[in-house]
Image 1 (spheres, rainbow, N blue to C red):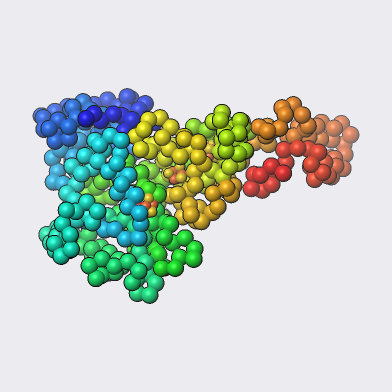
Image 2: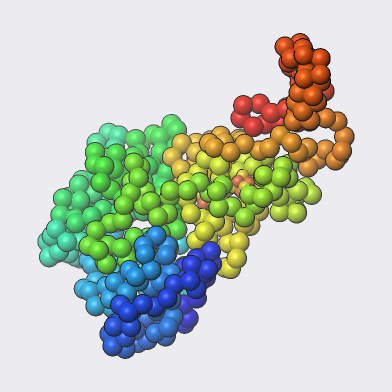
Length: 407
Ligand code: FSX
Ligand code: SF4
Ligand code: F3S
């Protein structure tokens, strides 16, 4: 079993290579002897992992030594993992990584004391184990919640062991050191909350009325983001900094559009117009077939997904991002609908891919022409009027509406 840099994000490779193992890391050498046996990786691979995860978390390279020390020396934090309304995809994506090392790492650095899907125990035994773990680790355990919480009609639409999801979560939250909502369902309601939301599904923070819950949205969530969050908790005894929606800044502070490998095509006006057309086959930008990358905050293009190699994320494989991690976008906005462009617009100076190059005049061209003639005859107002009628008639070509659509 080998840990590869790609497992922690190919896009971090450069950063990892740039990092130097400092004094702190060398001082740790003697504590690394057990690494091979415990994690099934060589010491070098383990240190590479520590520097990669440090880079992912946006920490200075020196912190890699602290991360390595925490993973090798600290007591594994107790984790109680609850399931509510969801498909278990978040657990599955964590466990079914192509390289089982990721799963091994996650399960080796935490003490998973209660997890309904993975537990061998059932019924009263499982309930007793949950209560015992909560009691034994009171105030110290990490509560991970997967799935939305139904709140309508007293929350009767999801019950385990006779208790509603809401009751179970309240009970477990009371003694938790920190709470992580994993997946879009637990973060903001996700798919179960899709209108008309018959069970009144809510995310954990809303259901509990708290604003200190870390959310890792995504359907499913990316296991690297969970792993990085746990490593931060283990190393520093607290969760990483979050934004207003509870998302860790290291993973959700940038729009997908800002890191997308197809961005150059967007900027150059080269778009797929339908699935399988020339632009799609050539790997052009997927904006016009509904990509929500311009309005979705996540690090998918940077950390990738599923360990199947380069380009293993939705847009990389040729499918527009559906905004699965973004409240109000995923499962709410139609997949084919155009994304709202938050801070970038497709340029108006390029014709569409489907249009013959070199035909017609585009808006920018008309504007330049208007400026030259206006200066010459000193009749700017008149020309502005003419320009609008030109655009209105469609003669200008390439005119875009406010949402960036070509008209
Ligand atoms: Fe939801 Fe995750 Fe989607 Fe499924 O748990 S985020 S439905 S992948 O399983 O909660
Ligand atoms: Fe990438 Fe989508 Fe942005 Fe195009 S619209 S650059 S495919 S994120
Ligand atoms: Fe989801 Fe879009 Fe990332 S669909 S997995 S947020 S690329």
